[in-house]
Amino acid sequence: MTIASNVKQCLATIKGIEAQLSSLAVNSLDEEAQTLFHETSLQIGDIKKDLQYRVLELERNEPQYKG
Amino acid sequence: MPDWIIIIGRSFIFLLLLFITTKILGKKQISELSLFEYIAGITIGSIAGEVVTGLEANFVHGAIAMIVFGVITFLVDYISIKSKKFSDFAEGKGTVVIKDGKILENNLKKEKYTIDELSALLRQKDIFKIADVEFAVLEPRGNLSTLLKRENRPLTPKDLQMKMPSEKEPQTIIMDGNIVDEPLRNAGKGRGWLYTELEKLGVTLDNVFLGQVDSYGELTVDLYDDKIQIPSPMQRPLLLATIKKTQADLEIFSLETNCEKSKAMYKKNAAILQEVIDKLSPYLNG
Image (cartoon, rainbow over all chains, first blue to last red; front, side):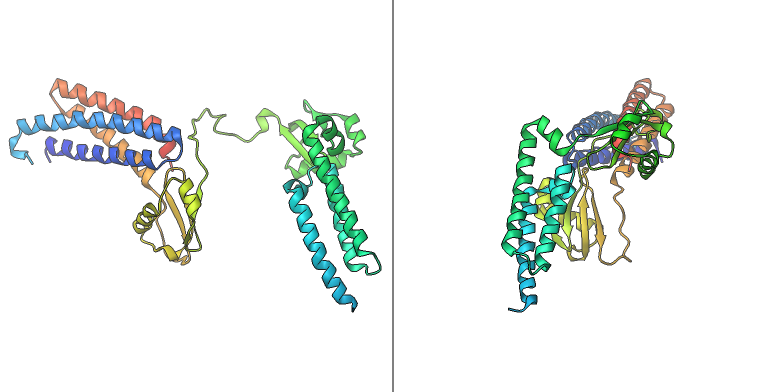
Protein backbone atom coordinates (compact mmCIF):
# COMPACT_ATOMS: atom_id res chain seq x y z
CA MET A 1 0.00 0.00 0.00
CA THR A 2 1.34 3.38 -0.95
CA ILE A 3 0.53 6.68 0.68
CA ALA A 4 -1.45 7.63 -2.41
CA SER A 5 -3.77 4.66 -2.14
CA ASN A 6 -4.23 5.26 1.58
CA VAL A 7 -5.19 8.86 0.98
CA LYS A 8 -7.54 7.76 -1.80
CA GLN A 9 -9.21 5.33 0.55
CA CYS A 10 -9.59 8.05 3.14
CA LEU A 11 -11.08 10.34 0.49
CA ALA A 12 -13.66 7.67 -0.35
CA THR A 13 -14.60 7.33 3.32
CA ILE A 14 -14.94 11.10 3.61
CA LYS A 15 -17.29 11.10 0.61
CA GLY A 16 -19.35 8.39 2.31
CA ILE A 17 -19.55 10.39 5.53
CA GLU A 18 -20.66 13.48 3.63
CA ALA A 19 -23.42 11.54 1.89
CA GLN A 20 -24.64 9.91 5.10
CA LEU A 21 -24.75 13.25 6.88
CA SER A 22 -26.74 14.76 4.03
CA SER A 23 -29.21 11.89 4.17
CA LEU A 24 -29.52 12.29 7.96
CA ALA A 25 -30.12 16.01 7.51
CA VAL A 26 -32.96 15.27 5.11
CA ASN A 27 -34.48 12.45 7.15
CA SER A 28 -34.33 14.03 10.60
CA LEU A 29 -37.47 15.65 11.98
CA ASP A 30 -35.87 17.82 14.62
CA GLU A 31 -34.85 21.17 13.20
CA GLU A 32 -31.78 21.60 15.38
CA ALA A 33 -30.48 18.18 14.34
CA GLN A 34 -31.22 19.00 10.69
CA THR A 35 -29.14 22.20 10.78
CA LEU A 36 -26.30 20.51 12.62
CA PHE A 37 -26.14 17.60 10.17
CA HIS A 38 -26.28 19.98 7.25
CA GLU A 39 -23.53 22.25 8.58
CA THR A 40 -21.27 19.31 9.35
CA SER A 41 -21.78 17.87 5.91
CA LEU A 42 -20.61 21.20 4.47
CA GLN A 43 -17.51 21.11 6.71
CA ILE A 44 -16.79 17.57 5.57
CA GLY A 45 -17.19 18.82 2.00
CA ASP A 46 -14.32 21.27 2.58
CA ILE A 47 -12.11 18.48 3.91
CA LYS A 48 -13.04 16.46 0.84
CA LYS A 49 -11.78 19.23 -1.45
CA ASP A 50 -8.44 19.46 0.41
CA LEU A 51 -7.97 15.71 0.13
CA GLN A 52 -8.91 15.67 -3.56
CA TYR A 53 -6.24 18.29 -4.19
CA ARG A 54 -3.71 16.24 -2.23
CA VAL A 55 -4.57 13.11 -4.22
CA LEU A 56 -3.84 14.97 -7.47
CA GLU A 57 -0.52 16.13 -6.05
CA LEU A 58 0.43 12.60 -5.05
CA GLU A 59 -0.54 11.26 -8.45
CA ARG A 60 1.74 13.78 -10.05
CA ASN A 61 4.61 12.70 -7.81
CA GLU A 62 3.98 8.97 -8.22
CA PRO A 63 2.52 8.57 -11.69
CA GLN A 64 2.90 4.81 -11.57
CA TYR A 65 0.06 4.59 -9.00
CA LYS A 66 -2.32 6.71 -10.99
CA GLY A 67 -5.76 5.19 -11.23
CA MET B 1 -94.13 -7.70 30.07
CA PRO B 2 -91.76 -9.94 32.06
CA ASP B 3 -89.32 -8.24 34.44
CA TRP B 4 -86.22 -9.39 32.66
CA ILE B 5 -87.16 -7.70 29.42
CA ILE B 6 -87.67 -4.44 31.30
CA ILE B 7 -84.25 -4.83 32.91
CA ILE B 8 -82.61 -5.44 29.56
CA GLY B 9 -84.32 -2.41 28.06
CA ARG B 10 -83.41 -0.15 30.97
CA SER B 11 -79.82 -1.37 30.96
CA PHE B 12 -79.41 -0.43 27.34
CA ILE B 13 -80.97 3.00 27.76
CA PHE B 14 -78.93 3.83 30.87
CA LEU B 15 -75.73 2.55 29.34
CA LEU B 16 -76.32 4.91 26.45
CA LEU B 17 -77.22 7.77 28.80
CA LEU B 18 -74.11 7.19 30.94
CA PHE B 19 -71.95 7.01 27.85
CA ILE B 20 -73.32 10.27 26.47
CA THR B 21 -73.02 12.08 29.83
CA THR B 22 -69.42 11.01 30.30
CA LYS B 23 -68.59 11.84 26.70
CA ILE B 24 -69.96 15.37 27.14
CA LEU B 25 -68.25 15.90 30.51
CA GLY B 26 -65.02 14.70 28.95
CA LYS B 27 -61.75 13.32 30.22
CA LYS B 28 -61.88 15.42 33.36
CA GLN B 29 -64.83 13.41 34.63
CA ILE B 30 -63.01 10.12 34.17
CA SER B 31 -59.91 11.22 36.01
CA GLU B 32 -62.13 12.61 38.82
CA LEU B 33 -59.55 15.26 39.59
CA SER B 34 -61.75 17.48 41.69
CA LEU B 35 -64.06 17.04 44.61
CA PHE B 36 -67.12 17.84 42.59
CA GLU B 37 -66.44 15.36 39.85
CA TYR B 38 -65.81 12.69 42.43
CA ILE B 39 -69.24 13.25 43.99
CA ALA B 40 -70.98 13.48 40.62
CA GLY B 41 -69.21 10.39 39.37
CA ILE B 42 -70.24 8.08 42.16
CA THR B 43 -73.78 9.46 42.34
CA ILE B 44 -74.49 9.13 38.63
CA GLY B 45 -73.24 5.57 38.76
CA SER B 46 -75.38 4.68 41.76
CA ILE B 47 -78.50 6.23 40.25
CA ALA B 48 -78.05 4.23 37.08
CA GLY B 49 -77.50 1.00 39.00
CA GLU B 50 -80.46 1.60 41.27
CA VAL B 51 -82.90 2.37 38.47
CA VAL B 52 -81.80 -0.46 36.19
CA THR B 53 -82.37 -3.22 38.73
CA GLY B 54 -84.97 -1.65 41.03
CA LEU B 55 -88.14 -2.37 39.11
CA GLU B 56 -90.42 -0.54 41.53
CA ALA B 57 -88.49 2.71 40.95
CA ASN B 58 -89.75 5.08 38.30
CA PHE B 59 -87.56 4.97 35.21
CA VAL B 60 -88.08 8.58 34.18
CA HIS B 61 -87.25 9.88 37.66
CA GLY B 62 -83.89 8.16 37.55
CA ALA B 63 -83.13 9.55 34.13
CA ILE B 64 -84.03 13.07 35.25
CA ALA B 65 -81.81 12.83 38.33
CA MET B 66 -78.94 11.64 36.20
CA ILE B 67 -79.35 14.42 33.68
CA VAL B 68 -79.51 17.00 36.48
CA PHE B 69 -76.25 15.69 37.94
CA GLY B 70 -74.68 15.75 34.52
CA VAL B 71 -75.81 19.28 33.73
CA ILE B 72 -74.70 20.65 37.11
CA THR B 73 -71.26 19.06 36.78
CA PHE B 74 -70.98 20.54 33.32
CA LEU B 75 -71.96 23.98 34.61
CA VAL B 76 -69.52 23.74 37.52
CA ASP B 77 -66.74 22.83 35.10
CA TYR B 78 -67.70 25.73 32.87
CA ILE B 79 -67.82 28.33 35.65
CA SER B 80 -64.59 26.95 37.13
CA ILE B 81 -62.76 27.85 33.94
CA LYS B 82 -64.05 31.41 34.15
CA SER B 83 -63.59 32.05 37.86
CA LYS B 84 -60.62 31.00 39.96
CA LYS B 85 -62.45 31.70 43.21
CA PHE B 86 -65.34 29.46 42.24
CA SER B 87 -63.06 26.68 41.12
CA ASP B 88 -61.16 26.83 44.43
CA PHE B 89 -64.46 26.44 46.24
CA ALA B 90 -66.07 23.79 44.07
CA GLU B 91 -63.08 21.73 43.06
CA GLY B 92 -61.02 22.10 46.21
CA LYS B 93 -57.47 23.28 46.65
CA GLY B 94 -54.34 21.42 47.51
CA THR B 95 -53.15 21.58 51.12
CA VAL B 96 -49.45 21.96 51.79
CA VAL B 97 -48.45 19.36 54.37
CA ILE B 98 -44.66 19.48 54.17
CA LYS B 99 -42.73 22.66 53.54
CA ASP B 100 -38.97 23.22 53.73
CA GLY B 101 -38.68 19.65 54.92
CA LYS B 102 -40.92 20.24 57.95
CA ILE B 103 -44.37 18.75 58.49
CA LEU B 104 -47.09 21.37 58.91
CA GLU B 105 -49.06 19.75 61.75
CA ASN B 106 -51.94 22.23 61.64
CA ASN B 107 -52.69 21.64 57.97
CA LEU B 108 -52.43 17.90 58.52
CA LYS B 109 -54.93 18.15 61.35
CA LYS B 110 -57.24 20.27 59.22
CA GLU B 111 -57.36 17.52 56.62
CA LYS B 112 -57.74 14.90 59.36
CA TYR B 113 -54.73 12.89 58.30
CA THR B 114 -52.74 11.00 60.89
CA ILE B 115 -48.97 10.74 60.76
CA ASP B 116 -49.34 7.07 59.84
CA GLU B 117 -51.54 7.93 56.87
CA LEU B 118 -49.12 10.61 55.72
CA SER B 119 -46.18 8.22 55.91
CA ALA B 120 -48.23 5.57 54.09
CA LEU B 121 -48.83 8.07 51.26
CA LEU B 122 -45.14 8.94 51.23
CA ARG B 123 -44.19 5.27 51.12
CA GLN B 124 -46.39 4.83 48.05
CA LYS B 125 -44.04 7.29 46.40
CA ASP B 126 -41.02 5.27 47.62
CA ILE B 127 -40.13 7.83 50.23
CA PHE B 128 -39.31 6.36 53.62
CA LYS B 129 -37.59 9.30 55.19
CA ILE B 130 -39.52 12.50 55.74
CA ALA B 131 -36.27 14.44 55.90
CA ASP B 132 -35.80 13.74 52.16
CA VAL B 133 -38.91 15.71 51.23
CA GLU B 134 -38.68 19.39 50.47
CA PHE B 135 -42.34 20.05 49.76
CA ALA B 136 -45.53 17.97 49.68
CA VAL B 137 -49.12 18.84 48.80
CA LEU B 138 -52.31 16.90 49.46
CA GLU B 139 -54.32 17.20 46.26
CA PRO B 140 -58.12 17.62 46.33
CA ARG B 141 -58.53 13.99 45.34
CA GLY B 142 -56.51 12.81 48.33
CA ASN B 143 -53.26 11.83 46.64
CA LEU B 144 -49.95 13.28 47.68
CA SER B 145 -47.60 15.16 45.39
CA THR B 146 -44.04 15.48 46.60
CA LEU B 147 -40.95 17.41 45.66
CA LEU B 148 -37.75 15.81 46.88
CA LYS B 149 -34.80 17.83 48.09
CA ARG B 150 -32.34 18.67 45.34
CA GLU B 151 -29.76 16.09 46.41
CA ASN B 152 -32.33 13.30 46.59
CA ARG B 153 -33.79 13.77 43.15
CA PRO B 154 -32.87 11.32 40.41
CA LEU B 155 -29.82 12.33 38.43
CA THR B 156 -30.60 13.92 35.07
CA PRO B 157 -28.36 14.80 32.12
CA LYS B 158 -28.79 18.42 33.12
CA ASP B 159 -27.17 17.73 36.49
CA LEU B 160 -24.18 16.29 34.67
CA GLN B 161 -24.17 19.28 32.29
CA MET B 162 -24.55 16.95 29.35
CA LYS B 163 -25.99 18.27 26.15
CA MET B 164 -28.89 16.12 25.04
CA PRO B 165 -30.35 16.40 21.55
CA SER B 166 -34.04 17.18 21.41
CA GLU B 167 -36.12 14.46 19.88
CA LYS B 168 -39.51 14.31 18.23
CA GLU B 169 -42.00 11.62 19.17
CA PRO B 170 -41.70 8.36 17.23
CA GLN B 171 -44.48 7.72 14.74
CA THR B 172 -46.19 4.35 14.38
CA ILE B 173 -46.46 3.90 10.64
CA ILE B 174 -47.20 0.18 10.26
CA MET B 175 -49.91 -1.57 12.25
CA ASP B 176 -50.88 -5.19 11.66
CA GLY B 177 -49.25 -5.27 8.24
CA ASN B 178 -51.00 -2.11 7.05
CA ILE B 179 -49.44 1.25 6.37
CA VAL B 180 -50.97 4.06 8.43
CA ASP B 181 -50.75 7.09 6.21
CA GLU B 182 -51.31 9.97 8.62
CA PRO B 183 -48.34 9.30 10.95
CA LEU B 184 -46.28 8.57 7.86
CA ARG B 185 -47.04 12.06 6.61
CA ASN B 186 -46.30 13.50 10.07
CA ALA B 187 -42.88 11.89 9.88
CA GLY B 188 -42.38 13.65 6.56
CA LYS B 189 -42.02 10.38 4.64
CA GLY B 190 -43.86 8.70 1.81
CA ARG B 191 -44.79 5.15 0.90
CA GLY B 192 -41.88 4.93 -1.52
CA TRP B 193 -39.43 5.64 1.28
CA LEU B 194 -41.09 3.01 3.47
CA TYR B 195 -40.89 0.31 0.81
CA THR B 196 -37.18 1.07 0.31
CA GLU B 197 -36.52 0.85 4.05
CA LEU B 198 -38.42 -2.44 4.31
CA GLU B 199 -36.42 -3.82 1.43
CA LYS B 200 -33.21 -2.76 3.17
CA LEU B 201 -34.30 -4.77 6.22
CA GLY B 202 -35.30 -7.66 3.97
CA VAL B 203 -38.90 -8.00 5.18
CA THR B 204 -42.23 -7.77 3.43
CA LEU B 205 -44.97 -5.40 4.55
CA ASP B 206 -47.50 -8.10 5.50
CA ASN B 207 -44.97 -9.73 7.80
CA VAL B 208 -44.64 -6.57 9.93
CA PHE B 209 -46.81 -6.36 13.04
CA LEU B 210 -45.63 -2.94 14.15
CA GLY B 211 -43.32 -0.40 12.56
CA GLN B 212 -42.11 2.85 14.07
CA VAL B 213 -39.95 5.62 12.68
CA ASP B 214 -37.90 7.76 15.07
CA SER B 215 -36.94 11.40 14.77
CA TYR B 216 -33.80 10.52 12.76
CA GLY B 217 -35.84 8.71 10.13
CA GLU B 218 -34.74 5.26 11.28
CA LEU B 219 -37.27 2.46 10.98
CA THR B 220 -37.69 -0.21 13.66
CA VAL B 221 -40.05 -3.12 13.00
CA ASP B 222 -41.57 -5.95 14.99
CA LEU B 223 -42.38 -9.02 12.93
CA TYR B 224 -45.11 -11.63 13.33
CA ASP B 225 -42.42 -14.28 13.13
CA ASP B 226 -40.33 -13.72 16.26
CA LYS B 227 -37.69 -16.21 15.15
CA ILE B 228 -36.47 -13.94 12.36
CA GLN B 229 -33.65 -11.71 13.53
CA ILE B 230 -33.66 -8.20 12.16
CA PRO B 231 -30.78 -5.84 12.68
CA SER B 232 -31.47 -2.85 14.88
CA PRO B 233 -30.74 0.49 13.20
CA MET B 234 -26.97 1.03 13.41
CA GLN B 235 -26.51 3.77 10.87
CA ARG B 236 -25.70 6.56 13.30
CA PRO B 237 -23.26 4.75 15.65
CA LEU B 238 -21.56 3.34 12.57
CA LEU B 239 -21.24 6.81 11.06
CA LEU B 240 -19.68 8.12 14.27
CA ALA B 241 -17.16 5.27 14.23
CA THR B 242 -16.29 6.02 10.59
CA ILE B 243 -15.72 9.69 11.35
CA LYS B 244 -13.45 8.74 14.26
CA LYS B 245 -11.48 6.38 12.04
CA THR B 246 -11.03 9.05 9.38
CA GLN B 247 -9.90 11.54 11.98
CA ALA B 248 -7.23 9.07 13.13
CA ASP B 249 -6.21 8.44 9.51
CA LEU B 250 -5.67 12.15 8.91
CA GLU B 251 -3.52 12.37 12.05
CA ILE B 252 -1.38 9.49 10.75
CA PHE B 253 -1.01 11.12 7.30
CA SER B 254 0.10 14.34 8.98
CA LEU B 255 2.87 12.41 10.75
CA GLU B 256 3.90 10.42 7.70
CA THR B 257 4.28 13.20 5.17
CA ASN B 258 7.42 15.26 4.73
CA CYS B 259 5.78 18.04 2.79
CA GLU B 260 5.22 20.93 5.22
CA LYS B 261 2.22 22.28 3.38
CA SER B 262 0.40 18.95 3.37
CA LYS B 263 1.30 18.37 7.00
CA ALA B 264 -0.45 21.61 7.92
CA MET B 265 -3.45 20.68 5.75
CA TYR B 266 -3.83 17.25 7.37
CA LYS B 267 -3.48 18.73 10.84
CA LYS B 268 -6.06 21.40 10.16
CA ASN B 269 -8.57 18.90 8.80
CA ALA B 270 -7.96 16.44 11.66
CA ALA B 271 -8.76 19.27 14.08
CA ILE B 272 -11.96 20.08 12.15
CA LEU B 273 -13.01 16.43 12.30
CA GLN B 274 -12.32 16.29 16.04
CA GLU B 275 -14.60 19.29 16.44
CA VAL B 276 -17.23 17.54 14.31
CA ILE B 277 -17.00 14.40 16.48
CA ASP B 278 -17.54 16.44 19.64
CA LYS B 279 -20.53 18.21 18.15
CA LEU B 280 -22.19 15.13 16.67
CA SER B 281 -21.59 12.65 19.50
CA PRO B 282 -24.87 13.36 21.35
CA TYR B 283 -26.82 12.90 18.11
CA LEU B 284 -25.04 9.83 16.84
CA ASN B 285 -24.76 7.79 20.02
CA GLY B 286 -27.32 4.99 19.81
